[in-house]
Amino acid sequence: GIQVEQSPPDLILQEGANSTLRCNFSDSVNNLQWFHQNPWGQLINLFYIPSGTKQNGRLSATTVATERYSLLYISSSQTTDSGVYFCAVGNFGNEKLTFGTGTRLTIIP
Amino acid sequence: EAGVVQSPRYKIIEKKQPVAFWCNPISGHNTLYWYRQNLGQGPELLIRYENEEAVDDSQLPKDRFSAERLKGVDSTLKIQPAELGDSAVYLCASSRSPESYEQYFGPGTRLTVT
Image (cartoon, rainbow over all chains, first blue to last red; front, side, top):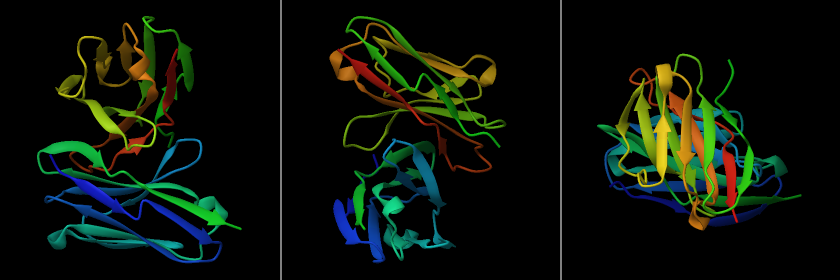
């Protein structure tokens, strides 16, 4: 099956800093989603981005499908950004999402 | 629009007991997924429904797990009997495929088996 790797596994930043999270995947995809799992365990949809670039406030994401990677950018971090960020992909003919192991982000006030 | 609803949110049972989880997907979403998330890992698919039909149950441990989706809306996931290793968060998700493959997740049920 498709493999998904996320880096870095852990990231500790001061409030106001910027960060870049990376997701590498091993096969062509027709679905790529970024999620934020908050401390209560809820998976919150950030982006549905199988290709291209999207922005939503302080967050933006870019997927380069031909090179099999996606990046999530967080600018001007806030303490509420803390949590685990997951990249998940699905490929053609298989609608299940395969998740990476996540990046745990901690924002210090 | 209401999100995916799951109940209960928490469940503690003794091993060998049965347990059931319920999911109500987003209105109009024909595809429903059950995932299991172990501590420190990403969710993994257990079963996927398109309307009433289970189209991918290859990861469902069929000796003790069962699922149903009557009338193509709500779904129930059951474990009988539960084992210690079943302790995890059980997540339900839905999508409006094939129009969109984007999946939306419910809050999950945290199961503890003692």
